[in-house]
Length: 581
Image 1: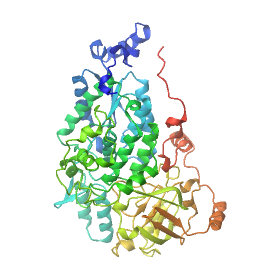
Image 2: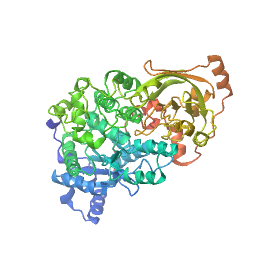
Image 3: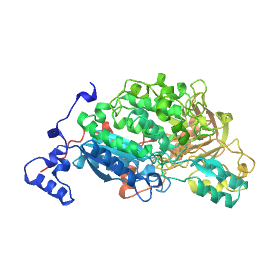
Image 4: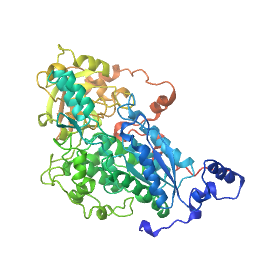
């Protein structure tokens, strides 16, 4: 059935439950809206559209959302709707500690309950900074109202002494150069001032750009929306169009349940591989798909990795270009056109048309930015999932962003139980370490971190940096920033904090890594591991009250998407509409 074939009637609007009845309670609702200066002309017979806005004074990626929300409102009004802004937790990736991942599910809960408890018929979800995209979408899926995602867009490219700077990626690069003594303190301060010079998200293919792109590929934002730079005049026009479309989606009753299938998420995975995506994509897409009742798994990511090459030549997998260049080259429609043989083209998107229709006329305007399939920057996809006795439920690596000689390697483990110990050790000039070793950080997973911080790009020891070493194998149950790079094995599951095999590794043990074979193996006998397991003692609790305590009781492991168990679709019957008495 075509979404446009359905036309909801004004009396069937959800918001009418609050405003339409001739009773005392509804009179109170209308009166309180009139208290704010609204009148019946604003809401009678009109879809009420919630603008879930993750703006704050502490979120650099969303600093333009104060204005963008007005652009979205303009679109809603143009289409005959009634826009109302509902602020939600902002989750600034570089600012919130210990990690925004601790609060992604908080945002999902807030979004779900905001939409359920208020008189709204549909929503525009305003996000972009890393965890805001999955958090907003997970909550909206559970709430079940028609919704469209409006991406923040990437910032403009950075600049230092005529050199293009990429957010995050060049931070790690120049920090190593500063540690090696090849740049001065003054140089470092100039890089600091030039690397992030406009509003918007990281302009490398980090988690923000990855999730905005995946969301478009799934079909939850307007075609071409994901890559529009935040400072580009196309961005407010896209915001207004998102508002207009939200109103139409309400009349069409185009809810997540009617829209989404497993094929939508498989399209998202295919696009992720072609983009050279952030490793965080796995956790977020798994969680989103499970919320939508269309579960995908690590195996789906690995399967697509085998057949979809990386064709977006964007840092950190690429070596030259940034998201601004990607937009000029044609953006997501052009990339999806290039990989259309790997897509389910008949799935419907938020604009009411199929993904195939949306990309039918897409063109690539720069073949070095979005490569042809037979000229990829990496022949297989961006991510690989390894398994073995050290990671029974998987560990993730980004082979497209690491040194090729490390894809098959056996090395000695150098183990750290916490980040402070590791941070202290790597600056020790007498540290017993070589470039052939494997750095191991544990107790940094969902429970151990807590919240699975982005600590997984362990710094290369200073003594090795001064020898010219710029990559080595690193293993952890943490995550890493999507702007990071290197031979980092992440999300080791089950995590060390709950007694996973990573908790049993000792310094000096040999670890074998074989990325082509998707294998990781701790070269220790089963008998010896059993002895170590018997002697293992659980670490101290991270929280004994508050949100953190609740988080600790209900968080799932990395391979399951790190959602709260009680929020997953399979946990219980759907929540009904609120009573109004």
